[in-house]
Image (cartoon, helix red, strand yellow):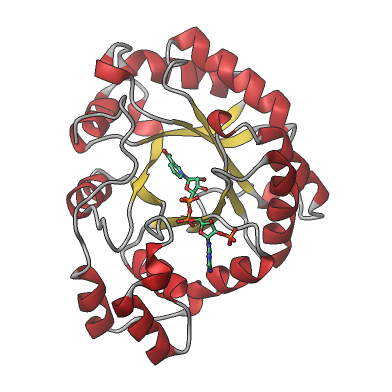
Amino acid sequence: MVETIPSFGLGTFRVDAEKTVNAVKSALQLGYRHIDTAKFYNNEESVGKGVRDSGIPREDIWVTTKVWHDQLRRADVVKSLVDSHKKLNIGTIDLALVHWPSPDSVVPIAETIAGFQDAQKEGLIRHFGVSNFTAPLLEEALNAPGGEGIVTNQFEISPFLANRKLVEATQKLGVKATAYMPLGESRAHKDPTLNEIAKKHGVTAAQVTFAWLLSRDIVVLSASTNPEHQQTNWDSQKLKLDADDIKKIDALDEGERHAKPPFAPKW
Ligand SMILES: NC(=O)c1ccc[n+]([C@@H]2O[C@H](COP(=O)([O-])OP(=O)(O)OC[C@H]3O[C@@H](n4cnc5c(N)ncnc54)[C@H](OP(=O)(O)O)[C@@H]3O)[C@@H](O)[C@H]2O)c1
């Protein structure tokens, strides 16, 4: 079994079910051992098939799914995870996250955590965590009974949204920060600073972005259905940026969120 969340994962948001099987399969064959999906993405069956067809032993792979924000009552959490477990069809799910906090905290986080603990007892999931939690919400969750089991807070981080305060608060609380939308909705590829640093190292702007996140001890989720992109993205783990590179990337922060649905918490 993979005991801790692997630092580089494949995302599957906005990847249609048909393409997901091959994307997951090729990523795993290239060396990825962490796949991120969600009930909301409607592709869990394909993720499971990709995992099963990859030829990589199941116990070497970490699969994360998420529970949507309208399913956070104790019994609903279990029901949602019974369905995810069935659709993925890969045995116990490694990690399940609260996808977004309960809007206006209508469902107390303690109740949701109790649902995750029920799911653990039933063998549906091994670990649980949260996503899109602000620092005060994360602290509240950690202080709820069983909250110490939270392994990660997954939220938007890119060179254009360094999210420094939330990263620091999450890490200080002993929780892994996981970055989604790391390329800033494809902006990274065109950014002159990232391209200048990429040229210096003979790599791509995406690789520079991922190396910068890894240097901050942040788990990276990158989504690609293209095996060549998957390979170069994966290779970014070998890239070491210098202090001057990091300083230049740090200066790109604009503090602007792109993921801001109407039910998002007040950041
Ligand atoms: N918890 C949440 O609320 C939440 C929200 C959003 C996302 N997420 C998770 O985080 C994952 C990552 O976010 P994201 O999907 O926005 O990922 P992303 O990696 O920032 O962007 C994915 C896009 O970038 C392209 N791309 C990737 N590598 C490339 C490269 N080397 N060169 C050129 N284009 C490249 C992909 O196209 P190709 O397929 O052509 O390579 C795809 O269109 C999601 O898939 C999902 O699993 C979670």
